[in-house]
Structure formats: C-alpha cells, structure tokens
Image 1 (cartoon, one colour):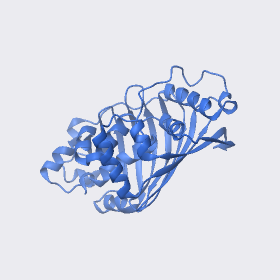
Image 2 (spheres, rainbow, N blue to C red):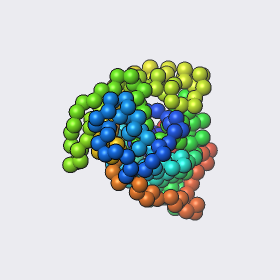
Image 3 (cartoon, rainbow, N blue to C red):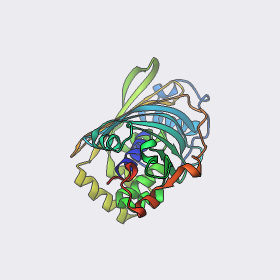
Image 4 (cartoon, helix red, strand yellow):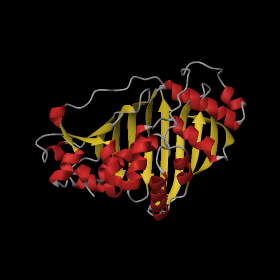
Amino acid sequence: MGTALAAAAALTSIAACSGSDGSKGSDGAGEGKAGAVSKASPVAALKQVQQKTGGAQSAKVEGTTEMGTAMSMKQSGAIGWADGLSGALTITYTGGTMGDALKQAGGDGSVEARYFKDEYYANMGDAMAANTGGKHWIRYSYKDLAELGGASGDVMKDQIQNSTPEQGVKALLASGDVKKVGQEDVRGVPATHYSGTVDVADLTAKNSDLDAKQLAAFKEQLALAGVTTQTVDIWVDKNDLLVKKTERGEMKTGTFNSTLFYSEYGTEVPSEKPAASDTVDFKEMLKQGGDTPGAAS
C-alpha cells in the first residue's frame, strides 16, 4: 500500500511531525496587533502565531516533499481544520520508487485527494478504473490504515486526524531551542523567520494520544529508519499567520525535505465526497488481493 501511505505522507507534511493538542485559536486571521510577532520574545511570539493560525481554520497550500529514494512530490490545494481535517489536494509524484510504481501501474503520476475527519479518498485515474469496474476513487479509513501499519499506522492516524498548519509552530515551541533568525521576504510578503531542532520521537510522545506500547514501537521503527531529529523553520507575516514552513531531516534512505507555502487563510474548502458509484474501499481491495496502485506493498 505504498501509494496510499505516500498520499498520507503528503498530508502529514502539510501539518507537522506531531498530532494536535486540540487547542484552537479564539480570534480570526484579520484581528490582532499587526507586527506584534516580530517584537515579542520567540516563545511568546510563536504562541500568538499558533493561536492566530489555528483560529483561521482554513488556507490554501502548495509545496514539495522529498523522502529519500522513496518519493518526491509536489502538492497544492486547500485544507481546513474547523472540525477535524478537511480539504482537497492535487498530489503529483515527481520521482522515487513510489512515483515509479504509480506510473508503471498506468497512472500519470498525479493523484487527486480529498480529506475528511475519519477518511480520505484518492482518485487513481483511468488505469485503476480499468481494474475496478470503472471506479476511480479509493476510500481509505484512517482506522484501517492504523490497523495495517502497526505502530507507524497508529502515529499516522493520529497525525492525519489532527493535522493543521499550526503544528509547525507547535513543533518549534516544543523543541526548546527556537530562535528568531530575522526578517525575510516570502514570495513578496515581509515575514519573520524562526528556526529550531525537534526530537521526532519526543515530540510525538508529548503531542499524541498514543499509549506507551504504541510509542515504544514507533520509536523502534524510527531508530530502524535512522530518523532522530528534524530542523523546522517557519516564516510568519505581519498578521501572525504562518506563510512558509520547511522541515529537514535524515533517514537511512536519504534526506527528508519538505517546503510548504500557506496563503488565503479563511478560504473555502471543498467538502463533497466522491460518488459512491465511483468509489471502492481500500480494505475491500485488500480482501480481494488485487495488486492495485493504491495497494502496492
């Protein structure tokens, strides 16, 4: 199910490497004292950014993600977080073994994904439809993915269901070594740059609903993958809203590198589910033993 997890990885890269603490900002994107973030201490400033970004509840997003030799992708769309996660993204695999597998299965490397509170859907294109009675969409339940993925599946479920752009801010607050880098322009927008190094396993332990056994298993998987820390950088505009986030880290399969841009906070987010007549359930596909693009091992 490599492509399924790749699509999920695209989503978690839009958030951060941790689940949500359930807190939400109380005020909207257009309120507050403009520029306050650039004058306060880094910790106080980032708490304000977390509140304002969380309170905005939706945004447009675009960016790129690389995960060693496994995959490289670009994504764009809109996500919302007023009540769980929602949104629609176009994910295009530009390289790596997962992208190659998708193309070998007859796809063009591009997947349309729609996200909801307990599930997401991926349109795998005409190549898959030829093997599924004309159905283009695969439905993935986060609960099913957690059961299939073991400890990493539990973490992925926790991350996806609680993903918001504010998590990049929260990651820096939890790192303990956040520093203000300075003022820079992001796509023509003046922004304040902050940076810090995050212990991945420790942050997951602090900010998730996983039990001790699940966390122990996840830390073991991180160790096997060679993942220990990530460097997180964020850029914040004069309205205390996140406009850019980067994450960098090392794995045994190569470098993890994610760059994401956020804009148009408060934007309308697509909420329509694909037609049931054009959808097949991922778990049912596994029961049938079909070797489909979404179920590749």
